[in-house]
Image (cartoon, rainbow, N blue to C red; front, side):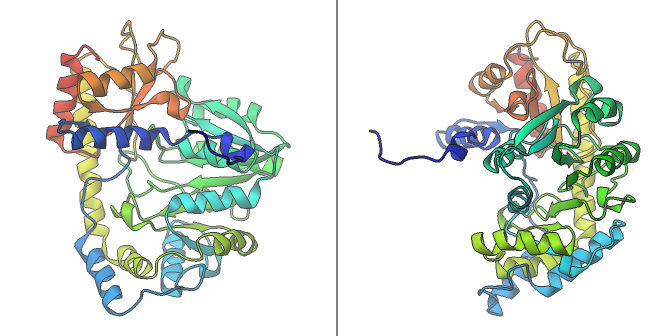
Length: 398
């Protein structure tokens, strides 16, 4: 049956989220009784810390169920600004917008900065929603492939320099990275800074995974000289505090930017949920121990997977953050790291076979503009990770 709606050109520019599509398929199969090892979801498998839950309940009991000021309650914005100052960013509460999730902060940033035909530069592999948000805003995309460089930015700075020009409006940097787990070095970020200053480019620094780092140091881009007035820092509570369903994020930029983005914010979502914001205050103040326990568990799982893949001749480029790993997939199997030169099977086909034959859910690398790879999330128990590898091996998928 057809309908009478006349759909906008901008909605036709984008496809549904591939990561959510795989996760939904896994959920459907589980509802039908299948035992799916779901390594597709970008969600910590830990409960929200109890003290944060208690703070949310207390806020509900206290009647904090109405609207707040559009940009967020003062206590939370002050807490976020203090956190950012600890990261070396000269931040004040007036430079913060609290949003219903980090996605909304990103969406508002693209909507505030991008006009039809503006150039946005993405670093591939790139999280799926960057492309969609840029296209919805009318952007033209230029992409820089990090796969030949082990997913690292520093060795790809020359390629980035070729991509960025005076015509570039916005560059998107995500460190630690989804989908690769790469943490970009301070030298790499200084290279971004130099290009941004030379060409007068604004930069999104998506730092949603900054508390989940292992053998590297996280550097906030806005803390570098020359970047404070041209960086929009995006962060949130979903990953570090295992608060995905609470939907709480934020952006930090200049007070002028906040004034402009606040128009979009106030006319779209009005404000983030009142009692959730109050739980966020508690998360910032009193969860370091819980965050560290989760980080250590993810580090152990990452190392376990590296060992398991190594046992089966699979060489992966190991990231130092987040909870993702990109594995090369294809026939014939080459067993080499991410050079991108070897013949690969279609990664979407591989992922389809993985879920249909092995009951293991992964996300095709092509969803992140990284064909020939599959993204796995190790936000699952060590037992389930072992089971996943065993199933993939048993079905000749590794």
